[in-house]
Image 1 (cartoon, rainbow, N blue to C red):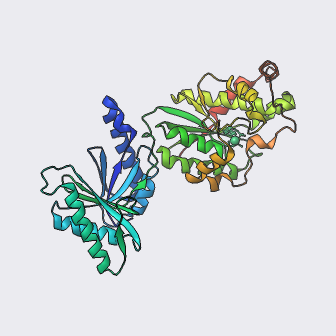
Image 2 (image 1 turned 120 degrees about the horizontal axis):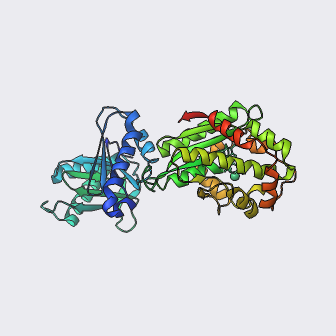
Image 3 (image 1 turned 180 degrees about the vertical axis):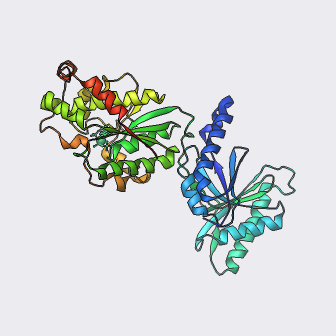
Length: 394
Ligand code: ATP
Ligand code: MG
């Protein structure tokens, strides 16, 4: 990336939003401002389907700014840019300086010009040709090698003639998706594993703000296990612009299930009660769906029959974006979003501490509802667990 204090951000899908477009753009700008605020003062403005982000303080770490912007959903490309006067001399000099800043030796390049300001005296091809010549001369003078390749260049240098002239020599991929907050809210059942953070990320990518619910069973699950979930929520929150994490005490309910229900149904019954609690929390936050990291057939509690039983415990829609993915595919996303190293830390989850040796892979809903009748106090216990939940703003 060239040294710069200016980034041009390109967004894709939002541009198609018709009358709603200003609302999407404003949300994106708000999210950009909140992502960058800890780094210093920035100006963030929109013009012609581009957002201009300019550092106003000296010494702002622009590499860190780019890293943060890569986590803002709605941004398709991040282009470090240089602005200069709209004269050929300064355009040529600035373009050459941008390219000299980069790792270019032995590479090929091409100059492309967009002339939005049609009053500019030279036409686009002439501008590109002159700027290309200036770059070649400057690089050669610097003792390095570069050549022109108009078909498949390593480096595309873009000259945009607008209110001023802008030079872009590098295009960094953004996260895509829609700005968080434009798609409502949902509650993620967040465990310490690989799948659920990925599931939350995928739904949030479509513009959905998240609450998260974690079921904690001390002393069977340790503080370390809880810290791990808080860490995962932090990693996610860089994308979701904050998360409200509910840590729900689950020990009493789990012991009640273990004492009163058939062994081979423990997991599914436990999952159904988790869903019921998460639904109550979701409704109180006006969340319109639940999200889980389930994937068909991954474990006994995720067969079609088990998913049917779990699903039947709630009325809200349950989004399971990993449902058709293999573990390798989920893992690849987990690594990409920076969650993997935390997810694989070996702290126990409450689901794993009392797993029955022979869980039913084809549970029957009628048998489950019958078994659940022996949980005589369950409504009060659910009430109490929600009341006692710790709420952590991440
Ligand atoms: P993960 O799916 O996060 O990798 P896992 O595969 O071990 O963990 P399972 O035990 O198969 O998870 O549970 C499936 C889903 O149920 C999880 O993806 C998560 O959404 C939810 N879940 C499981 N345990 C918990 C928990 N302790 N707190 C909150 N949600 C949970
Ligand atoms: Mg899983």
